[in-house]
Length: 414
Image 1 (cartoon, rainbow, N blue to C red):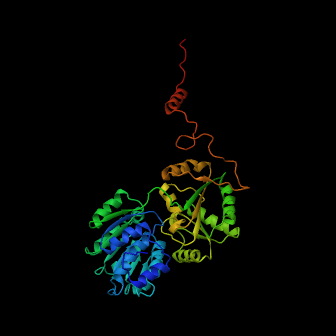
Image 2 (cartoon, rainbow, N blue to C red):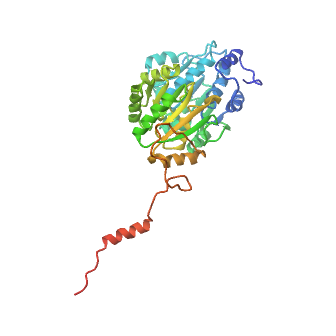
């Protein structure tokens, strides 16, 4: 994978066994710098191999050395539980037979069990909300911390973790190596990078506003929700795919669709924020193993969920932002594999869809479903922007008309 970098033989073997045949661009650029002790700010598209880019150098530095009790040598902070579990699994694959221990620290698990595991952890992958109680309890200390990774830092800031992050970072030793990973680079992230990184290199891979070339993006027009229901079932029964993810904008709709798909004998599972932690783990594990092959979810799964074999993404509803669309469709077409993304769009979503097309500078291919082609064919007239051209009266004319109605005619003098 890295012909010019000397890695531990067992680590090299585990990298090959994990399916990494060639280093991705972000890995080629980040791994050597991290091995040299450089702080990094990394911005790269989903599916580009960022997790392995930092796990490989961390593991290389840990091989042959044991961590002091309750003092891990690496800490990875993440916004959601599912990402923590995913990184932990990847670490375990890369450290097979290397006697290094990872602990996933998330809510919904027994606190005492986590406390016992922390006593011998080499790396901790945690959500800030679960890590802080363990810090207060004295379950974990950072005196021996060599690596601090903030994965999906932009999302952690969006979800209100800033104060928790500040508190945790303050407890970490100054003599550490820090990596900040963010899909987007808003002002808040740039400010954070300036505060916590030391003479950092900035690695930016790919364009911010585009899906991977391996993803074919389609548009299917729908008359209404009932029409979408039928189209969705047809797609899941007739398209060729290994695993599919169906995205909705609300938990209520996701729950209804899950039941609807099960009724039609599809192997579906439900994932959203109200599903209990035990249920989330079981759902994701079943999807990983193929016990279920259709995951119905909200944007909870649009980032951080990396499941092998996802080759179809269906947007039952268009997302409200272009970045969210990119995160959703980025669940497929990963690691150079082919994938498809199909968006079901009715008249009320046309302008939103058009805005997303302009944002990502892409025109979706039209996909007609035989027997389910609706009456809605798109707007009769389009603006130059691609949005529907509505009949709108000028504001001034409308105000004049309104004023004229209120003004009573004068009576003629007798």
